Image 1 (cartoon, rainbow, N blue to C red):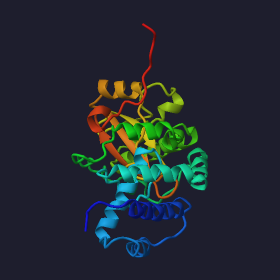
Image 2: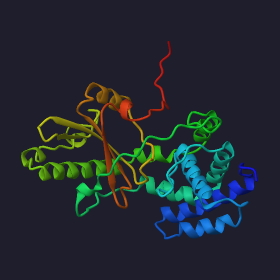
Image 3: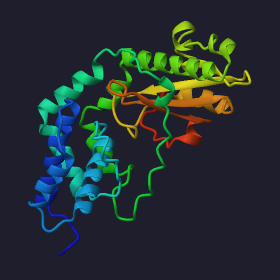
Image 4: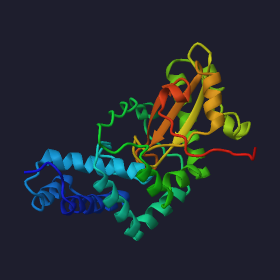
Length: 285
């Protein structure tokens, strides 16, 4: 049997994924194993592992299109153009799903209360695997053109001031708890959400401290969605992170509206992140 997936197979797996995604975003229960078992019956002898990887490919395509994906299917970037096209076409007709996400990314957010906020810290995700030759790359023109024709829901979420402020306050509580746990109450009392107290042009959001008293400059990026969801960085944030790389920390807060978690990375943003230029400021020469 050929390894290539036919259009019928790709359309079947994308339809199945979107059914699960709808349940996932509505916080309705569904069974991945049952979905996979039913899907395999429609395919040409595909294994459970190959179906799982294809579901991960769908997650990667949705990430390219700046749309939420199922957190249980980690994005796998080596996928065929046919799959991307089918996912993009499916998004174009999923009006109810688009309306649901539109409401979600603009909903006001509250700071969640959890028993032990320090347990919210998890390791950063591993770097994305290199793209194999002949497979889709993030910079491919068809991906860029598809995004240009569609709503960037992650950009809309990034402009949700309520969500951003709530994420920053969550990190404020985390930092105070971290320093209290270390016996540094005098430092914990000085942690400050500078985006609120001093304005949002400093290039970071929370001023905290190392246990030795050194400054810890924290830029907070918050999403309601999965850990690998892309985020937006301003030129000022990048510049400040480069100028103060020894003190600068990125705190990525994710799954914020459900069971919030975060990971932290220290250093200049261009050293800890893969940056993709998407906008330029121009002046006439």
